[in-house]
Amino acid sequence: MEHAWFVATRWGYRPNAWPGYLICAPALAFAWTTFVAVDRHSHSVSDTLYGLFPYWVPALLLIERIAARSSGER
Image 1: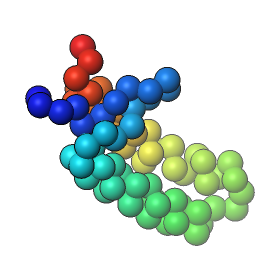
Image 2 (image 1 turned 60 degrees about the horizontal axis):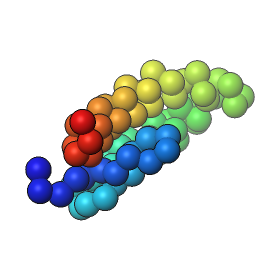
Image 3 (image 1 turned 90 degrees about the vertical axis):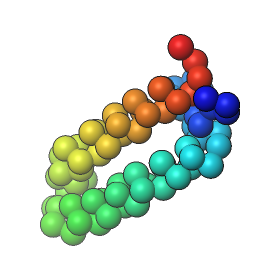
């Protein structure tokens, strides 16, 4: 890989090139739409967090996996 898509930071990874931003954009859109859909039917903050957990955790783990593999650090 010529240029790393992500750069390792203290607690994770941040996009460093346009493919990294291109990968993060749909994840942010997914997070926003699931938040709106789950929060619409929630009655409390904890109800919203419990509803978001099964959607956000796999999405964030997928992004973290892609970032770790394309950061150039092994």
